[in-house]
Image 1 (cartoon, rainbow, N blue to C red):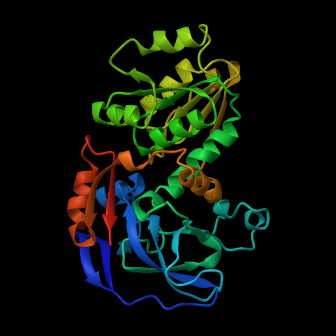
Image 2 (cartoon, one colour):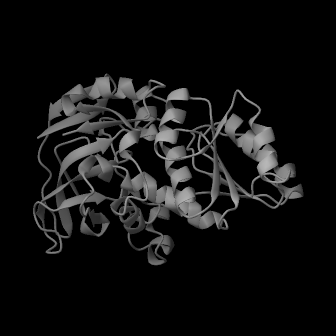
Length: 328
C-alpha cells in the first residue's frame, strides 16, 4: 500500500506493508484526511517526534476488514485518535484520552495519510448519510469544539467571544451559536472572515477596527462571560485576559508548543476560570453534522491526492487557505 511518510528529508511516498488485522481491530480503507495544525508543526520541525512517521488524525474512510461483527466491510467510518492503556486511573474512569501511556495517531504512532489503517474497534464511529468523507474528517475537531461549549457552561443568549478564525475558531463559534449563545468572532484574516460569514456567523469583529468598543457595548461594559482563545498565541491569551469579565471563563482551544507567562495575579484577583480541552463527544459531533447544524464544506479550501502531499502541506500554510484535505 502507499503511505505519505514524514522523514528527516521531508514528506515521501513509499510502499509500506498493509497492516495485519488483529483481534478487536478494524482495518480502515482511508478516503480523506484533514491536515491539522499539529501536522503542520511536525512538518515544519516546530514539534519534534520520532521519525519516520505517517501523519494525520482527522480521518474518514470505509471499513476494509473487521474482527468486530458490528462493523461490516464498506461501512463509512471515522476514528478517534487516542489509543489508551485501558487499565490506568483515567482509563477506568471513562477518560481514556487522559491516559498517560496513551499513543496518538499521527503523533506517536502512524496515522491516516495512508491507504489502510488498523485501529481498535472501540475507537470507530459509523458515518451515517448524508455525511461524506470530506465532512467526516471534521468529526474529531468538532467533537473537541462541542466539549469546549459543554465545559464553558454558557447560558443561552449570553455573550461569547471567540479569538481566531482558523478551523478551530470557526467550529467553536458555530457550536456556541447552534446552542443559542450570542457569539462574537474576532480575527484579522480577510479570507477566513469571509468564510465565517458564509457559514452564517454574523457578529464579526476585525482586529484592525475598534472591536473592544463593540464587545463592551454588547456586554454593558463588563466584557463577555466566556472567551475562547483559538489562536494558540500569547497575544490571543492576553486579549482574552484583558477582555473577559471578572468571574468569567477562558477556554483554551488553540494548541501551542510554546510556554507563556501567565498573569496569575489578574486571574486570582478577578476570579477568572481557565481550562483546556483535548477530546470530545464523537457521537454528538456526528449528530450535529448529520442534521446540518454545523457547516464545514465551505471551510475546505483545497484538496490534493496522496502523491501531492508536499503541495498539500505547502498550501495549508498559506493564509488564504482555511482547511486542506488529502484524498486517497
